[in-house]
Length: 424
Figure 1 (cartoon, helix red, strand yellow):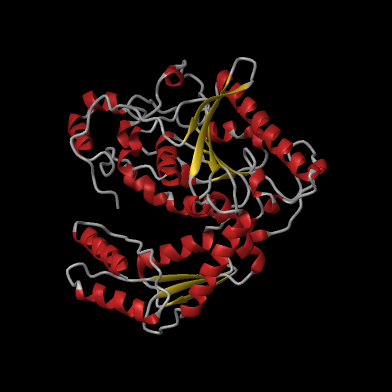
Figure 2: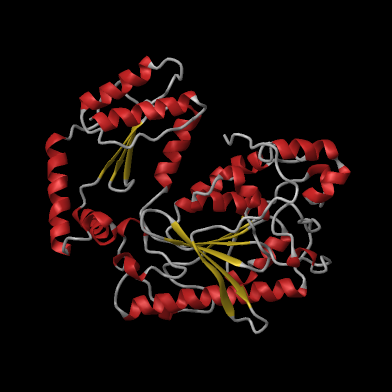
C-alpha cells in the first residue's frame, strides 16, 4: 500500500511538471482503493486530473492457460522453478486476487471494461478527446503476434542516385518529383522485396502446416514475417492452396501512400490499400528542398526549426507534429491487424511509426535513419516490444541482414538543435 501511494504521488508530481497522460499500474482491485485514488487526485486541484479506470476481464480458460505458460516461460520470476511449479504459483496468485477482487461498477466513475480480449467492451462516463481515443485504441490492440515491415519507396526516375547514397533523413533528402515513378534500380528493389517477403511467408506457412498446427497454437514458431490468428482463433491455413500471390485464410496487409512511387514499390505484394495519411511530410513552398538547402533559401524558417524541430511547420506545409496527428488512424489500423503488415511510406512517416512501435523518444525521431532500398522488419518479442531487423539485397537479389537488435540507427544532426519542443 505504501509503495502504491508513493507511485501515485510521483505521477501527480510529474503532472505538475507538464505531464499529460499517466498510467497508474497498481492492484486497484477494491472499491476502497479506487475511492482513495479519486480522492487524492481530486485534492490535487492544481493539475485537474481526469481519471479513467481500465479493467480487463478474462474467464476463458484456454486464454488464461496460454498466458500463464507464456509468463512461466519468459518471466525471470520463475527461472528457479520448474514449469509445473511456476504454473501453480501463478494459479495461487490468481486465487488470492479473486478472493479480494471487487469489480469496477461504481456508477460515478469513468471506466472501460474489456471482456475476453475485447470480445465485449463496456464504457461508463467516458468523454473527451483523450477518452475516446483511448477507447478506440483499446478496441484495436490484441495479444496476437504479427510482424510489421516498414519500407521506404525505391529510387525514383531522374534522381541520379543522389538519395540512394545519402538522404536517410530530411536533413539531406531531396523529395522525389510529385508523380514520379520508379527508376530501373527502384524497380529491381521492388521485385527483390516482393520475392523475399512472399518466400519467407510461404515457407513459414508450410512449416506450420506440416506440423499440423494452427498459427495460434504455436507462438514459439513466430514467423520471420508472420502472425497468428487473432484472439485465439483456430483458423488453419492451407499453404498448398498457393496460387502465385494469394493464400487462402491469410495474407499481407499492404498499406501505401498515394504517391505513384510508393504504389510502384508495392507492385509485387499483391493487393494493396492506399492512404492519404501515409503521404510524405508536405514541404509547402520549400518544394523538394532538404533542410540543409532550406538553410540558404529561408534562414528564418531554418532558425525556428533549430529551436523546435517537431512543431515548426515548413513554409506553407506541415510539421512533424502535423504528421503525427494524421498517423493516429494508421496506428489504430495497424494495431488491430492479426496478419503481417507491410507499410510503404516516406521518411518522416516511417520515423514517427518507428518511434511509436519501438518506444523511441519522439522528440528525437527526426534523426532516425531510413535508408533507401532497405527493409525494416519489426518482429514481436515478449512483453510487447519489437526486435528490429534491417535487410538489403545484393546484385543477385539475395537478401542480407545488415543489422539486428533493438536499437535504432540515429543520424547526428549536421545543423544542431537549440531546443526540443514538447510532443503533444
